[in-house]
Length: 380
Ligand code: CA
Image 1 (tube, rainbow, N blue to C red):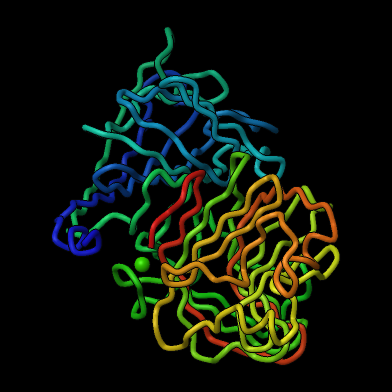
Image 2: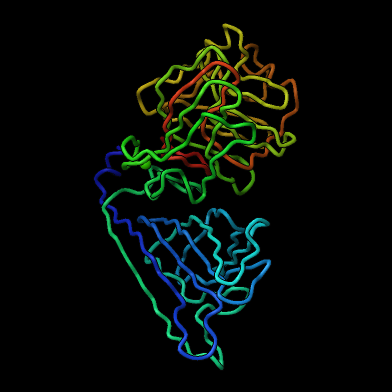
């Protein structure tokens, strides 16, 4: 019923571009220009922001503004994005702090709102207004707004998720914005691309060409913010049944486990979790354990839901049904979580990566869509 309602509701999404700053006719030019690109739906939006330093070179920067409404930022990327009340302060990360004259930095964020979503008007760069107002400065501020309106639906079932992405705003060949493509280990033949024809929602998804062999790891990933229990939900479809060999299609860096990955993937043709630090598997790879997991069906969109909590509990559902072998409840159960619980594990995951990691055999083509992570359960 919810999906039906979502399909019926015609929600207007707006992609807008506002340029603040402009040409100086007398005195100093504005110290900065800001491109603030919005993609919004009824209750939320993402903004991709480009700030250009038009003053002397800097080695660090911050950009501030005030929201006119009840916009509430839930996550940011490529900068440190902080909100206090209606006030937002964005600071550079170590790798994008140096901006020469005329150089730009890009960052983005996701937020919720209700009512109207006004573009901020009081951008300031390192404390100096971007509108160039000053006693000796006369500035002609030009504001250019280009708006395209399409009828669509918001990202599927976001609820209050801090991260919710349907990839509909991706315009390039590879995922951009909050997403980074790569792998910490060696990479080779694996590839990640935006697919404009296969989608769970809208018309776009992320396609992963996963190749066999250890040196073909490839992921697209994003940092996770916040702490406490992590609830995730994503849709995946793929072409090739999970192999007998161990493979991973989702990984999360676990700073509670020496920065090693918490992985979801497959082994013995069924879904499994794996802990990189000690190679524990969930379920145990006994025939009885494997039988309590499930294969990942091919040729259809599958909804995967998971919960990781700081006490070390883990739960997993596939297409709306809990998978018996993929639960860590704290009570050791033979063939399920007995091995997993041999070690005290207090996870603190700090990113989400989707893609393909094979340790030998196993190639697959996968598509991901409608990825959401938040602090409460997210429905299929
Ligand atoms: Ca989509």
